[in-house]
Amino acid sequence: MAITRNRPSAATRRRFERAAGDLGAAAVQQMETQHEWYRALAAEERSWVGLVAQAGIRSFIEWFTGSQDRSHVTADVFGTAPRELTRSISLGQTLDLVRTVVDVVERESTGLAGRGDEVKVREAVLRYSREIAFSAAEVYAHAAEARGAWDARLEALVVDAVIRGEADDSMQSRASALGWGTTTDVCVIVGSTPEQAPAQVVDRLHRDAKRLGVEVLVAIHGRRVVCITGQVEDPLATASALGDCFGDGPLVVGPVVPHLYAAGRSARAALSGHAAAPAWPKSARPVLSDDLLAERALLGDLPARAMLIARVYAPLAASGGGNLLETAAAYLDGGLGLEGTARELFVHTNTVRYRLGKIADTVGYDLTDPHDAQTVRLALAYGRVAPEPSTRVARAQRSTL
Image 1 (cartoon, rainbow, N blue to C red):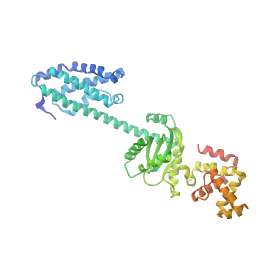
Image 2: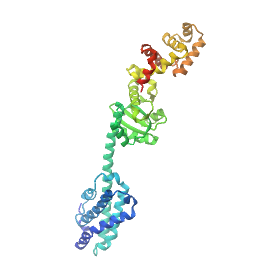
Image 3: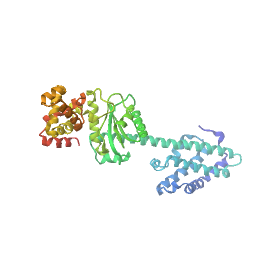
């Protein structure tokens, strides 16, 4: 909006117009003297900063001697430099630049203002410096929004590549751009999508993860939220702390892998576990994908089947001359309890009790627990129909890589 009452006299306007070049040179010289960050810039970047300073002074003089309309401030001043300059010059440094230019204009304006125009000049400098500060903030806000949108696209592409198992050069370069080039101890958490806008879900996960001191990459896949976490010490504790960011329903945590480029295995296990979790309604929240091996195997997850064979059937078959495998089969398939299993095997009840404890120590599953018993029963079934024993373990290990 034009404010004509603050327009200076013709003599003052001519003095300022003639002094534009000298004021610009003085501002650049003061930048060189006062600010170390300016001296550390490359020659091209110093040139751009100098052009911005000179453009600011020219724009002030045109604004001061003209209509004093703020609408062209941003374009006139910051339009002279490429937007890439916001990546080299921080907002704080830009404010240093604005402050230096204002100081120079204030210092020199006393001698340039005609009689009766001193107050008008001071007021004009104050008003214009305010407009410049807001314009600088606007430029950096737009740059931050653009950077944030670009980072969000990169983040989604990296998560998609991890899910597909495409750890190629393009995924590595995108991950490095997001600061994930050296991130270790990675696991994937999969949960339901809450009733919020996707951007809000992603932002909240990033905020909560930052408070926990972990790194995250997040993508919304329809009804599922896929969250890749890095620098994880306790995956279940991390998932529990982030649990409120997910919707109701299962929250499944994949195994921890060394780095992002191996995270495909964790993602596949977590996604499979999330799909299979409804088969175990009383499962914990969060739950490890390895605790859902039986449910995953029922859905046709071949790595889960292979892991059941490798972790349950093969150790039982190789331990105690097959006595543990025989005892597990008799206890589970017969449903006879301790005494019935003892009669079936022609051994003492204490022997069956001892073997059940040995089974729990060997494979980590307690046959007296209903869910553990179901898992071992499926493992025995898959082991019986698997290839010959000499290839079972090797094939299982290859399938889980």
